[in-house]
Image (cartoon, rainbow over all chains, first blue to last red; front, side):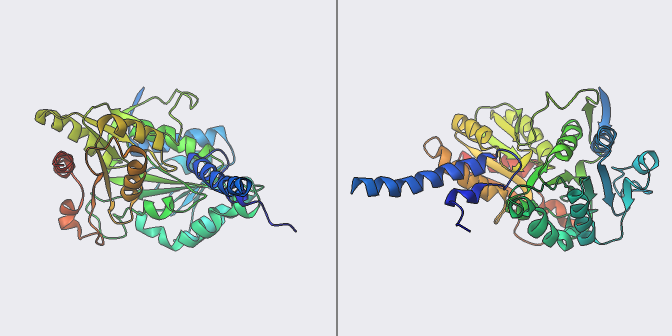
Length: 42
Length: 327
């Protein structure tokens, strides 16, 4: 069974949208993307 | 419009929810024949029967554990924890099971359980009967945590909580059970303020004062008193403690430049600390002073004969406001 995607951390916490979870997901996604950007820059 | 006490408004909200959905059940210690120690469920067992309004043993862990089982079978249980300090035996069921089942089941299982908890002091009671444990639950992902402040809002919020597919910890300000306001019992929920949103109770320009539960009325009274000093307080009833309505809080503080958080719970590690951090992150360049807290002291709840010294009151709120102008 493959590992879940890192952003799966934020799934299935609440039944509907949650502002705090959404904001933290966005921050974490941007953080993850920053590694991709650095790889491309190299 | 009908004039109701907060206790009666909650009872009418429960009644409406039970009429609208046969899957709504009520369970707790003395909620049936007695109608609850604060009479919130008075008359419901007589009208809906012993199968839907269940007098339970004195076993909070069992009450919540049973509610989880009922919710797994499609019911919407509403548990009453008789007093705030009685919730601790149920803590494991709430934070380890109730809060996590959705994630554990990859979103296939909802547990729409409401746990009503009378909280706070001011009624001359002893420890375990005057506590404010909301931060323990607001710190637990998977739970929604709310606190009502007046009868009109309580009537709406209890129905919204019951209709939520998430577990909701519903705090009721026990010293406000006898407060009365007009309640629109004919109105529906569609036009009501959503459960996760704060509401601006008093508009002002100088200081944002954030409160919930029993402190809402205290802060509204402080806003009136502050006008004598020429100060304009904006009082926001947070309503939802998890999630916090950061949008409303931040918009207000960016206008006023000052923020005071008021709650009965101990200051250390409380909601005020969380709010102070959020406001500092979002409003750093607009703040004229640090976010201040007016709270219960970081001690166990004191004997009732000196509880008025422990509890924030109008003067302590105004003192907090004064201190924000000292920077």
